[in-house]
Amino acid sequence: MGDNILELRDITKLYPGVKALDHVSISFRRGEVHALVGENGAGKSTLIKTVSGAIEPTEGRICVEGREFEALTPALSRENGIAIVYQEFTLVPVLTAAENIFLGEFLRKGIFSCQREMSELAKKLFQRLNIQMDPDVKVGELTTGYQQIVEIAKAVLKNAKILIMDEPSAPLTNREVEAMFQIVETLKAEGVTIIYISHRLEEIFRLADRVSVLRDGQYIATKAIQDTDKDDLVRLMVGRTLKETYPERNFTQKETVLEVNHLTGNGVKNISFTLKKGEILGFGGLVGAGRTELAALLFGSAKIKSGEIILRGKKFDPNSPNAAIRNGICLVPEDRKQQGLILEMTVQENLTMAVRKKLSKRGIMRESDSREFSEKYVKDLTIRTPGIFQRVKNLSGGNQQKVVLGKWLGVDPEILIFDEPTRGIDVGAKQEIYKIMTEIVRQGKSIIMISSDMEELLGMSDRMVMLSKGRQTGMLEKEEFTQERVLNYISEVVEDE
Ligand SMILES: Nc1ncnc2c1ncn2[C@@H]1O[C@H](COP(=O)(O)OP(=O)(O)OP(=O)(O)O)[C@@H](O)[C@H]1O
Ligand SMILES: [Mg+2]
Image 1 (tube, rainbow, N blue to C red):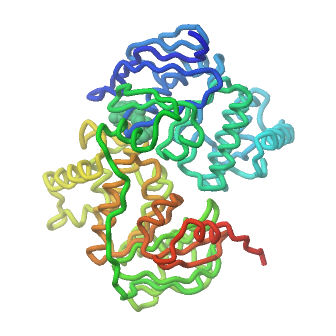
Image 2: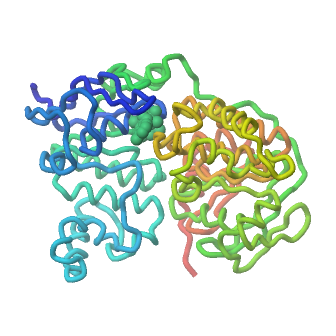
Image 3: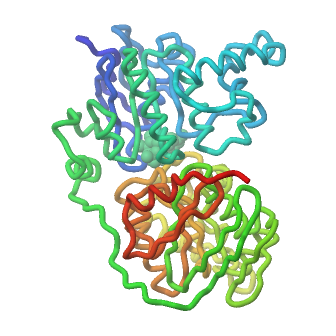
């Protein structure tokens, strides 16, 4: 097998009504960073799950360092030096970072007797990987960004020869991504092979040696990174040329719908801004900047300590999400898996959950209306599913996210708060989401858009507010937008009082 550490041969995976993988063959070289790209539902996660032993291929062979397998189990996969960081987190929130990392190793000895030892080991591991984190903090108290870093540390610990990362950067922003890149580069230098799935193409050009493309469960191509570019990859992924563009818009409205004065609560302090009718107001910041916490205050899911919110000229106290929704404010949360979906229910049930009233006549929602509504959003958002009756838990990660977006887009509220609207979403669907957002504001509604995607912030916002460590560090008008200014504001050092 030359210097291939891993060879996948003719892997096929069938699910009822879905050919997730169709005779896919890819080889991975020892010590390379090999990226895997493709649209939502292309089969990336399914492919790497056959390598981690989470699922059994319907057909095909997996060769690890010359040993051939029809299927791997998680244990076999681990024994062969394969470690994986999943798209879905597998951490236990009530345990500390150290306990989570060493959970498997210490389970037999009883985790409570080894707390100090685990904490010391975690500290060493963090040092080696250059991670600044307290190993004794409870994982449930960490932001998504730091949770992800714990996930990576946990996988790395096992002295893996092959590390598989399924969208590791999705929940991270600039600084954390940098830290994660360092980890990847450290490991690569140690000779580890890294299989890296991401929808952020700029990361792939920064990190990968080679890249393989999947489309509709089929293998399309493998390219050396120097032999390809972004347009080429996108074309291979979607099967046609697609330019990343932001819809043209002429924002002129002056009427204020929402005014926030000196708002203070958990994680944010003294935030003031106005939101205009028909405006997309962008919020930039690093992980932990307080943007999600601010959204929680506006949406009534966290307590306001001081300051005020004025909605359409009247003082407004959103003391619960229901109160916010009744007053026309909706939130599409960042952590969509936990807050936005019922995985056991179908695509249709999830999509119509928030619009039952709207679709109902005299208290009854007609099945045909519900179906029509669901099919429209499946089509508009290119949700890849065998049908609206599929359970959401069977959809790919990106497609689950699209379902949550669809659920709230249908509600048609006056103010929509989007927390990372296109995280983990493929290039084609991103365009659709931008179009829908543009349509929403064209109707005179307003959007608060929290995003860690610099291009998206610059491309979609009419004005932008920057936060750092819970404080407001800047505000930019459209004509002042530059990447450098945004970066300066979001990384501004804020003194603790
Ligand atoms: N357990 C399952 N049951 C039925 N269908 C499934 C199951 N798991 C995956 N699929 C389907 O297989 C296809 C490939 O999914 P996969 O998760 O591999 O996509 P992906 O490339 O990782 O996408 P994303 O970028 O959205 O994460 C999808 O159409 C998905 O709905
Ligand atoms: Mg996936």
